[in-house]
Structure formats: C-alpha cells, structure tokens
Image 1 (spheres, rainbow, N blue to C red):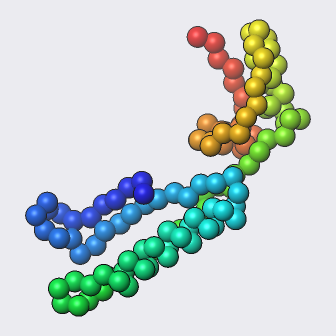
Image 2 (image 1 turned 90 degrees about the vertical axis):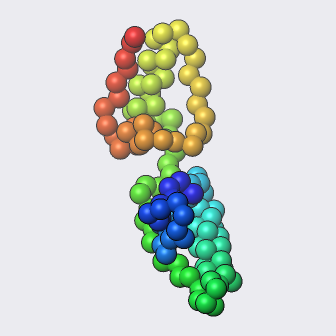
Length: 118
C-alpha cells in the first residue's frame, strides 16, 4: 500500500478509509494475479469483520492501467544512442532489466534522448 488516508481526529474511529496501491510486474499475467489477491484480501476482510452492532464494512475497488511494461530492443534508436554516448566516454554499456521509473517511460515514449555532462 502506498497511500492510506482516513479520519479527521486521532481519537475517533473513522467510517471510511481510502488506500492507493500499485501492482507492478514485467509479466502481465502475474500482475493480474497480484491485483486479484489484493482484491480478494480486502473483500474477505470486509466479510469476516463486524463492528459492535454486527455490521460489516464494504469494499469498493477501482483501478486503471497507467502503462504496460516494456523491453527496448537492441536496435532501438535510443538504445543505440545511449551505447554510443557511453562508449564515447570510455565506458562499456551494460544492459539489464530494471523495475523502471518515470525516466524509463521517457525513452519508451520516443522522447528526445539528451546526454548531459557535469
């Protein structure tokens, strides 16, 4: 869970809590499984737990796919440009799968590659 919000005072039990979470995987089927398990866990908790009056909570889950995982091929122009820039400073390129980040999306979206020096 990334963000949990709810309530207005420290000494009062809130009637509502909002959670924001991410499910990430390079494998879309595994990511779907993660999402299903999160949903099942919250649904199960809402069914099993009752308050002093015997009432159960409810769960409303909404989701969206912001972006799909990707792997750049060796012949992509940005990969070639990065290789050339790395070799130009006397280093050897090293390719690896990472868990991404917003900067990786810049390359995937075809934006301009800029090599900066300090």
